[in-house]
Image (cartoon, rainbow, N blue to C red; front, side, top):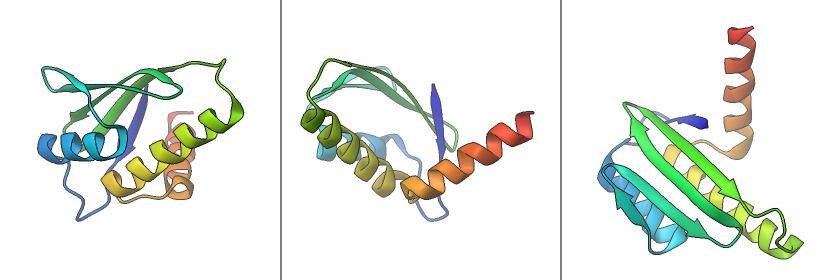
Length: 103
């Protein structure tokens, strides 16, 4: 499972999460407050908010072609950029910092 923080000014609300999921991935299912997405190389992705943290569990298909894998990754990164306000580089920096603090 991955966890993503929200930059100041980027509201972690259920409505905003659902709006962004629909914008980037199209149709999705709901299981309570969990958004369930199936998109290109993503067999299933579950997204939900835990306070001010976005939590994501995903399962991908490793057998897709390179182009589909790249398109899926780019879409996922654009989704996270717009939702959380942090770029991929900034998200990586946060994750590295979190890992270091756990050691």
